[in-house]
Length: 116
Picture: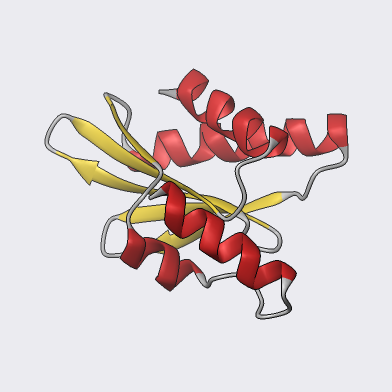
C-alpha cells in the first residue's frame, strides 16, 4: 500500500495529478476501524473534529457527502484525506484514505480515532 502512495506522490509531483477518490478506494484504505456509533453519528463527529483542525492549523476544511446506501464520506477540500463510514451490525466501519502521508494526515487520523 505504501508503494502505491509513493507512486501517487511521484505522479502528482510530475504533473499527473493526484489519484481520484475512486482510485484510492480501488487500492484499499490506509487503515480501517470499527465503532459502536452509527455511521451518521461518527461522520458528524469526524467532520466536526476535522473542521476544528482546519481552523487551528489552516489545513483544508471538510464536508460530508452520502456514500453507498447507508454511509457517509467525510472529505477535505481537494480530496487529499477522506474517510468512508458505513453502517455495520455492531455500529459502523470507517475506512481512512490519504493521498500523501504527512502531518495533516496524521492529525486527521488521530481525530478519527478520537471519534470512534
